[in-house]
Image (tube, rainbow, N blue to C red; front, side):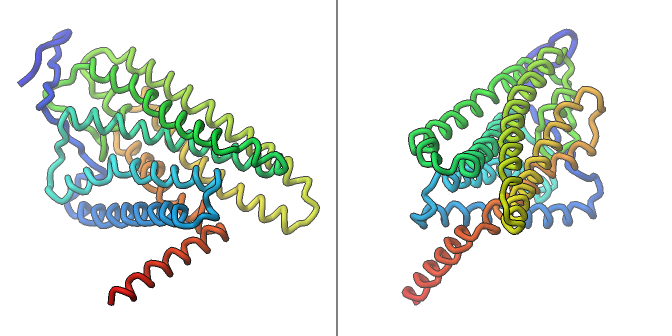
Length: 322
């Protein structure tokens, strides 16, 4: 059933479904994709959950840097959970369907946690900038009150930032059969399949992407440029190498996240719907959240100690119950 017509096109009813075509049409590839994405999802959840538990359990890690890291890990868990479970369910049940409401809901929460990752990366870059460039004033600048306000602000802006795109999408009409060449309802792909005029939706998409992408990225680049300038003044070669190695790892994740995300969104108008964008989306929706625990934590000596302490506590509890 349809609600009605808009400019000669049918508008989807809330009970109607879209079809997610996934990454491949070949049946023999489906089992491979299921195993691969299930493994990646498990590593992402397990790795980020370990980071959160380690930070909570170790009082030495109750600092601004690790507080932001815990929030990033939680955001990454939610970010991947908005897309991968539905994809795995569709492969397992050999179904491509997702309801209209489910699609809009998925787009909203995907955008919320994507923006949250975006702002948390910015705050973490600023935290490192203060720690390296203004070490004597770090505790004064990054006080608990400011950290709490920054976290609250990032959650609030992320939620509000996702609303315009979702609300404009609700005003669109779609044809009776909507086939999305993707494994989740990504906004640019959905807009291409609308039967009604998408000019306003595209303007909102570009404005939100530009504002929510440019200013945080500018903040990250500014922070790291100041960090690099400060590191260059370090006299020892070992100190320079360690600092540059850490910054290089962080910037590689930022580049991967921003490069693929902005590339997919900003090129949506000039490319036709295809699975090329879907494969690009895998990098920032799956690979980057999986890499964050390793890059931000497992190379960190304090985090390694906290993880060993957590593992020892778990093993001790198991020994007591046996």
